[in-house]
Length: 166
Image 1 (cartoon, rainbow, N blue to C red):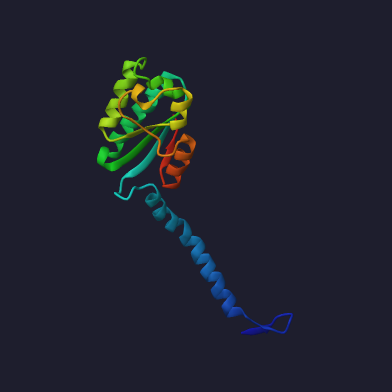
Image 2: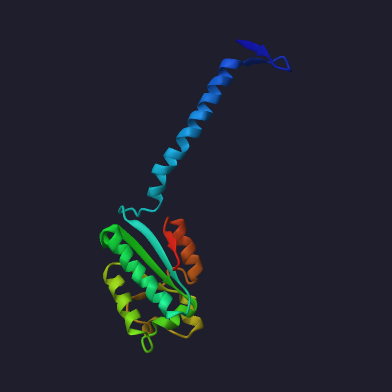
């Protein structure tokens, strides 16, 4: 059936009905497609879950808690071969990881997660501001890939890393 629109152009009712059906179908399918696509955003190329942990405060209990969470997270995923974890430390938290003054429990927790494959990065700008080179930090840290930790955090999130800040 064809009707004339205001300007004299033919208006095809069947075409409008088909268009509505396509829009409705896409609207119903989109959430399902998104459900299946989202997990891929947080999986590394190797199929590992990608997670970023962020520590920047000077409270040693929060830092210990973060490292305990990382350890539990590795276990919960089924082991180090199932998860890719990056720990980014910056700001006042740097002082917690200095070799000379580190809390032994904190040091041990860091060693455990590094031994399980977590990657620990210390902000380059923080090291410069606090006058603490990598050599004065507990073993296991490497400098952040970008000198500014928050930029590194943003880059990791762009790469699909889930963000956790205890």
